[in-house]
Length: 135
Image 1: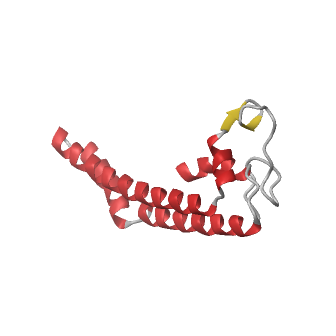
Image 2: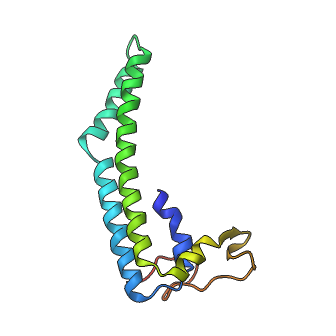
């Protein structure tokens, strides 16, 4: 999930407890919305339709394209949720934190900011990459 890829950057910011709580709520809401899209009857129906189409005695490009277009619609729904989430998280961060993200460079052996080779400060309550901020 795209939002999960944002976590390493966010985990290296010196977020306040209030910011961490806000980010958690935003991320949890996004996950719930995306899970609902994935678990929808329409999404499950597409899998069944593809399987049935693929295993049928005949198949046409038009039929496959129709199913792929349905998949694109679902992806666009998820993209809208992700875009809203990114904007919401952006609104929680300070100018300094946004600049730290702009300077973010994944480095070998750890995450580095600004190319200076020093590890960025951890979020309050965090113990390193892969650790979710505590509530």
